[in-house]
Length: 134
Image (tube, rainbow, N blue to C red; front, top):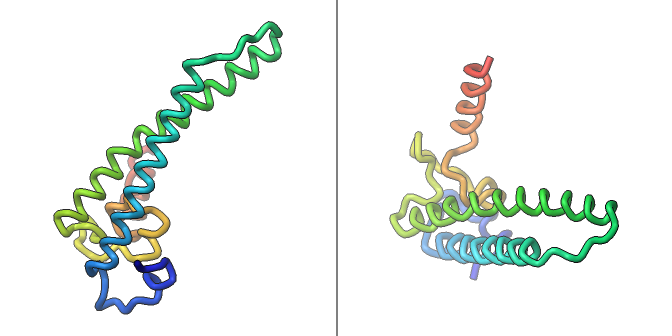
């Protein structure tokens, strides 16, 4: 199996070959499982609140619960992105910008394996969003 160093050192002509796709598929499957485990852990923690007799303890627990809910919500939103990336691996579209068709690039995919856009298109879209907000 390839390592991250192998991916970074690979020539451009090897971009998204079978070994690279297998690497990212395994990475995404691990990320999916870790995300699901995190959601379940947070859900269980919220389902079994501790007995808080002290106001300070109760306030601390409520703050921790709010934070856990935000994290859980964020992770739940990540799951469809992971599933979409796994589908793109299956269809052969993984690693290519959905707008320009250009390679997203190994470094970006290692950082964000669910990326759908290359860095240039993503930056352009973000500038447009900022411009339209004002």
